[in-house]
Picture 1 (cartoon, rainbow, N blue to C red):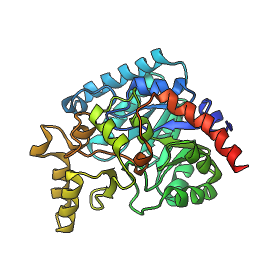
Picture 2: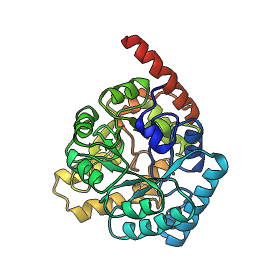
Picture 3: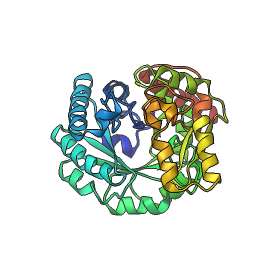
Picture 4: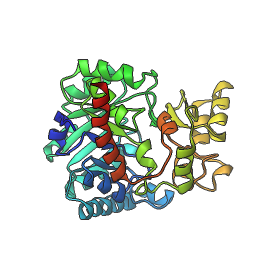
Length: 335
């Protein structure tokens, strides 16, 4: 397979990055991806067993230390940790998370949902490579100016939080590639070798996948959530939540009700309250209710539109092996 600048920058064999997914990307998955030649990533709630733990800063720090140390016992290859900047309390949490990650020798940081100027210099001072997530050309230019080492372009097809301008991957990636000099990584709508070849053809130097790695043995998503992914069809996901931050999830009672509330003029606070709680959740918040507890009817089942192409649960290593072998087969067919 082609070695790109991204491979050289990160010290990985293949230009394939496992996207961090809240709650369900722990040490086992990250290490499996890294051992297979890609870049595995720990999610922000890695190691937390309950919502209460995820809200306790001392426990969050301890869990992150334990997860980083565990990855290092499972692989000697590079790995990353995700820091979604967010707002309010989330920023405070990430300041502490980053301090812990630096102390534990994290080699690569993937920063999202906030200004690239906030943590890039601090991470660089500690010798850490910084990948920043963007959803537009303007954000890409700002990230490059802030000194990040590479950027991930999230297309509208992606699962979880996505851009409000509805730019699909095939439209966004080549424009960003033309706008910046640093390596660009394509995300959204990629699950096999055809997507990898297409991303490289657009000028990207790597790919970033979440949903395909969700349906793997090493991912600690609830079995019901994994089954929902492999049973999904081409129209099984929906992007919603324009007032509160657009996300793509599996269609269910939660997404339908959320869209009804928006259409009827619900306020931001009313929508946020519905997102966070409900009698239909058994005490969980929407995201972990689906991903961790398996409530795919009333939880926020974050999932990319590419789910319709995923029809089996396999190992993370097998995902990468098939992409590497399939890459050569796709190129041969094109020739």
